[in-house]
Length: 128
Length: 266
Image (cartoon, rainbow over all chains, first blue to last red; front, side, top):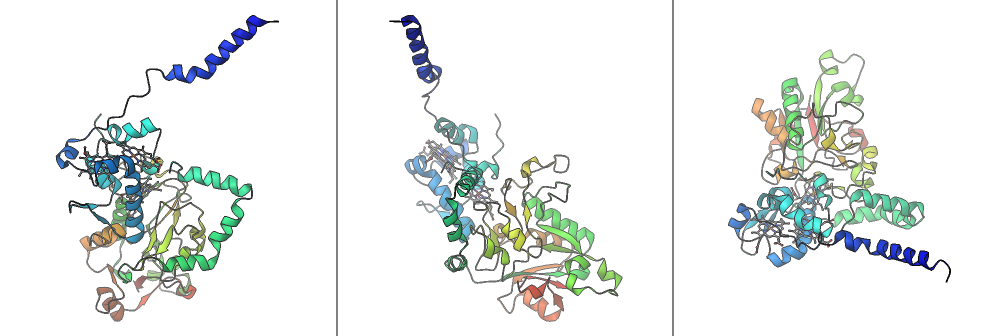
């Protein structure tokens, strides 16, 4: 075999290169996000809808709020408990979840999501 | 999800260049479609909001307070450059506001009188007819509304509006010069807009829905009552109808047939 050594070295470098993302991320990734609740949220005990729904589908709720608020002039949302919420992203969601960086962003960073809402909607000021 | 407006526009632009956009564009712009889909909007209350502006009572102090109240309520920044300025409510002189009422010998006191201008919330709004995404449309109560989530920044509406009531965000409003906007954003409960969208007065939809008067009217009332009068034209007993029946009023460029809903007492 001609140049066997070089080929093998080349293969090793090649395999190293292709698997580098695994080594690079080893130990770093996979920390489950743990969204923190503010005192205000803890006192409220429950979210606008069931927690399981909020976990998986809060963006659907937000989309519906946005649509009905702006386009149909329907500005209040009545929860199953009978509690009435003003349909506002910054005024309602972020009033309870005012620790945006340790709540919303925890998950979103983990999932590689970055909702563009904050180009316009104003993030709460957080004491870090 | 996962694609924001700018990305979408870039993709759409490339697709259009590749010839894929052709059919979609024709579909969007077919005139019958736009009209048909406007009718499908749910009824709110079938009212017709209007404003009467009492010109002889206007002075600089009142006008400046009104403009400040509006722009603070809605986070409208000051750029200090007329080329990129964003305005919802602004001052203009009689001569430029009512070009069709002009004559050479008009009384000085009218010619250079300044008054307040804003979106006229026309009953026959040309901006809504040209909007390809229905980001601007007429509500059942007459308000010419904006849905900033849908605006793609094509600026057809700006070309269609004969009153210059719409402004384009040439840059990010949050990057407006800090020295001119020390407290920006002034109202944390109202979103700003972003680069590349059009904006204008919405007759304070967010306040009306809570039973409050528009911010400019409230500001004017604090200084003097009945300078700006806001109410329902559909109701024959309303404040605006009464004022209109007792005073001679004019509207901007009525010959265009847009049916403005801001009236000026001369």
